[in-house]
Image 1 (cartoon, rainbow, N blue to C red):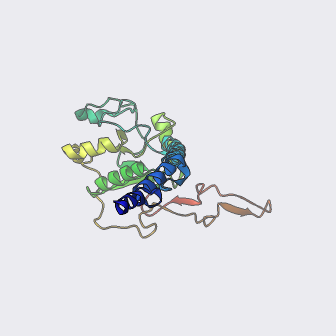
Image 2: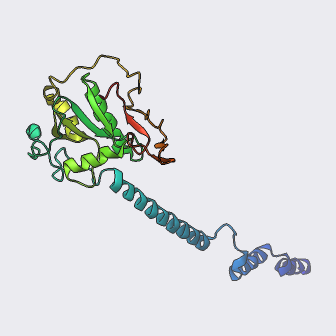
Length: 259
């Protein structure tokens, strides 16, 4: 019995009681939060995430503002939901589409051709794609088209603004026999219903595969008077003057294909 009592006392000794020791350590960890798992930093992570999210949002708003400013200068001010755009005057030849009749908009001295105002710059993707689409549709009929690139000659932009009576002009714009037709949406719709082919019937046909040797279908060549420098030396005044035969880029219309 004496041996049993000693064994009982030995087991009750807290120095050898593992369960009690583990329990005491867990209590100490709860009292000392800095001894907790270092990967469980929820508060700092949320704070870092919120700060990063706010910076991304602010950057997004600044980029969006720049894009809207560019669109207002060169692209569409709004994306039309249908072919009808009440803000743009349309010609009477587009009555089949339910467009507004405005026969007063005409381009003089172009009764025998198709005129397209467009831009070759890729600053605004939607505008550039619309210009390419309209040009490809018209070229598919193999007719001669007077393409006027406003990015190559600023005078075309001023001319179009004067004809339409608008300061901010969306591109492209198409005139057939001097009559204003509309933009890309109108041309695409007329082409789908088969009316565009009837409207351009009688326009001179272009030779298939023809490429102008003078300009390569760019429609512009360097000025022969100043060689594209925009300056001409005046011997009488002994100074260089502005060349009056070329545009702001030192270019002139190709005399071979645009005469």
